[in-house]
Image 1 (cartoon, rainbow, N blue to C red):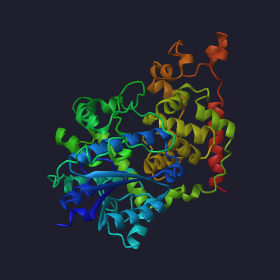
Image 2: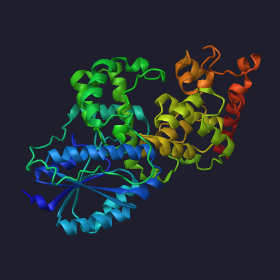
Image 3: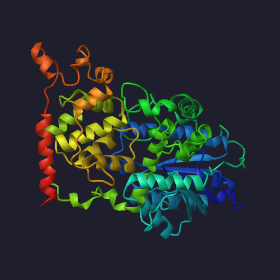
Length: 473
């Protein structure tokens, strides 16, 4: 066994103790030290949302207490960027006589380059993988390449799951007694920077004890029917925890298959529909692993590189503020601004509206989402935006343009969601609420709600012409 004073577990985007391979490996070697280095300027450059910063801070405090029970003391340091993490880590290891650093890998390009620099500098960084269900690089087509379409990827991904049952990283018995109050600082960990309160989102220990069992046992069977309706709580709400690594995606699949033993073969079930969402998350992580240049905001499909987006700032600002004159779009954007979260179907609706109705570059929407989402995750956010814009891997084709009015009628028929986030329309009849302008005109209430910033039919025709023109150039 390595000397326990010679190793440290370095937490990054894996703020949990359950199914944490790096932590499990460190504890087997008697590790009693843990480290977290917050690269605040780098996070700001990467557009981390203030609500996500608060969410991370709260989970760091939870993690500190959980580690203390395992006899591990967490040190939280503030640095500027990834390069300063290297310097800080070097100094820490020298001062603490650390010879072994355990951490879980991160797939993003800058993070990967940082880890390679650390290894090149001679620091013994021992990496595990903890952010996906099926190992990245293991789901390949017949040419030993990454799949370009999701469904074949998902089928191969399922085959891997059937052939190789999940082996969760279970923690060994603590080799050290709990860290006592005398050795554990009493004050809370406080990260610098602007923060927005995230306390409406319970900590992950509550999610693990209450929310996940309740969802899998009682709500999962209705997921297929309810997931597209923003006016009801039909989704799991776990994305913020997955984004910061507070919950393991493998543990979710493990819990799901224990409740639904035939799940991997029953692709028509409601529970499988939820598993499919986890497969999409893996798909985008795998995609980033194979195509790291996506981190530079490049189009996955390079034929779109010549698109000359008009990028009308007034239209973009109206979209950001939830003042487009399309109630479902505005309700979704206001939900994002008020809560730091947006229903998944509405993410597709508003992304399609920005890129195809307003002809604003998808990168501007991608950045705005990251600046506000509590569940901001680069691979999923980038993948979703490129899907909506038609520029991504297995994206919706450019000529598929969501109609925000029919989407509203289909998924918020009674206007429950709209009334909550666009309260100026709360008194309108359900039939009129999806596009209220004729009704408001007839009743002399045009001042009640902002006029539509574009006409749907005209905008659709312009979008088709825009894409065709630049694709044929």
